[in-house]
Length: 253
Image (cartoon, rainbow, N blue to C red; front, side):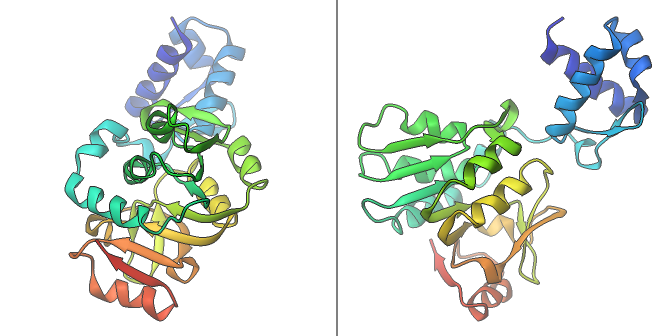
């Protein structure tokens, strides 16, 4: 059995039982306890479970399987395309930009093809968009690969971002609350987003109207930290006013 299949079975077992010890999992999967411990460490870093003393428990946010990148790309595709086109127009030639994970930032990358810019990203879909474009200088951040969502996360990603200074960061999110809090729902992604905030001179939040109020239980930042918000016409006007009052520009795609 491959490590990926074994880890999938661990998560499946926890969805049924809620928690399990290292010994139980080792006996069920017929591998050593040290192998299970390594698997649990990887799954914990990926936010798929929570390590406990002697075992693991299901992470609250993994009780419902995470939507894949491909499935997410199909949701609100017209709005995302409009947001991406408007956001890409903010990029000037020779700029250095950081592109967050997500389907909208992948579309931003598509609009940057052929332009003399530097793109820094942990988004493997952005890599696919720009890998053969000689005009774009492409820098891929390191980290743990989250195959389901085509991203790189973890301490290596955050450490690499501390070496970066960019003109713009395009930040994605899972929701923007009416009080102006920008939210996400994955433990492994939120620290990387917060590191991105510190890596650039200006922060551009890309969030179509479906993100208002959206979902998410982890606070990334407030709209006061955002220099510009690119969204679509159906976004909550009161939340947009919160952004403007905090000094941010609002662009309607």
